Amino acid sequence: MPLSSSHPHTPSSLIEGQGEGAPLSRREARRQETHEALVSAAMTLLATKGFEETTTDEIAQVAGVSRRTLFRYFPTKADIVTAWTQQMTDVLRAHVAGCPSGTSPQAMLCSALEAVVPHMAQTPPEAYAFVYLIERTPALLPVSLRKYAQWEDSLADALSHHLTDQPDSMLAARVAARSGIAAFRTAIDEWIRLKGRQPLVPIMRKVMTLQASILHAP
Image 1 (spheres, rainbow, N blue to C red):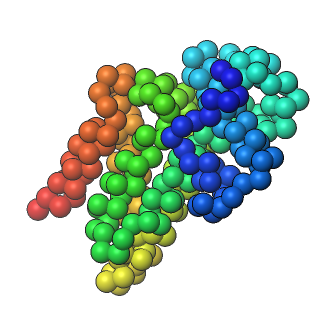
Image 2: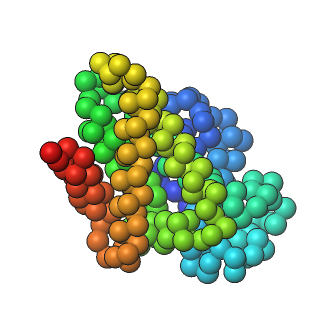
């Protein structure tokens, strides 16, 4: 996979923490392009061959860079997967930050978590392979848990500004955020159980609806 083929779905400004619309120098743009291409190439190889079975030399070869260049960007294979999850974390944060006032907590949770899905990969089969890799590789469990913790923090912070009518808005926001993450993880488990044969978003909506009906049942 050539280094010029960067991921088309993830805003570059989000990946490197640049402000939206902030100009990048040519050097920064090239570094960012290399970063994105390395993540894309490595994730495809890791998902195809397996995390433990893939060597850093193979990743460098597929990405078309030297081993030294690869280590300059990512000291370990887990760092590559972390970078992939960070792309989605940045998308989620940007989405919740842009939610208009008056958005219901349920609507904000659903739209924010759904917004992440198109940024997983270029195609649904590839997205499923990437998700399966991180969710079912024991060595990547810390990466997965850290991703969900970051998502929960972002959702809780945003929800705290939407739940001002609650006696303890921050506690209420954490309850809602953790509930949303639990629903997302349940949907992911169901998606994996179905071997990716159904789209993820409808599964997420089904789980969210089921969760709401159970919790609000008399």
